[in-house]
Image 1 (cartoon, one colour):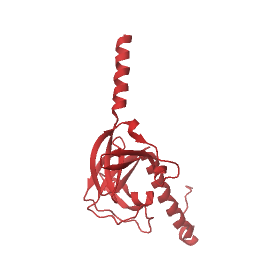
Image 2: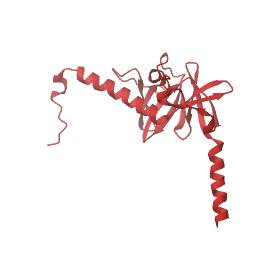
Image 3: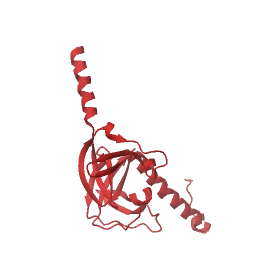
Image 4: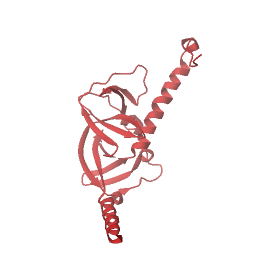
Length: 183
């Protein structure tokens, strides 16, 4: 029995060392990767419904099989030059902690295994470090390996903060008749 157990442990260790599959994509001539466990699917040719007075990070929403999917600009979250969303862009659907977002990307380039030991942490103070696990030196250059949980949390914070600001800037009379209590 212990022989089988040791074999199972060795196989698990070997699989862990083989790496995890990552979806590699480009945005504004930069390469990024997200674990395929978080990157559920890729959409192409989708038309977003804009949200009035939405923050820059929120392009709009999509109807994805009956669910509302917020469409988020990676550009504004990482502080890279923003360009407008077009239906020619692709959307990587990311999931973490029961939250789904559509991430606007230029093009999905590859899906490949990256060993955990091949991912190097960004130095403190790096502009992308707060949303990334690190970077991977690929044959074509550096690939920022995103942390889906941190990225989705940052997107939710950016959008909700901006909407809260908009609400506080609105005249009080607009909301005075609204009651959140059930009497």
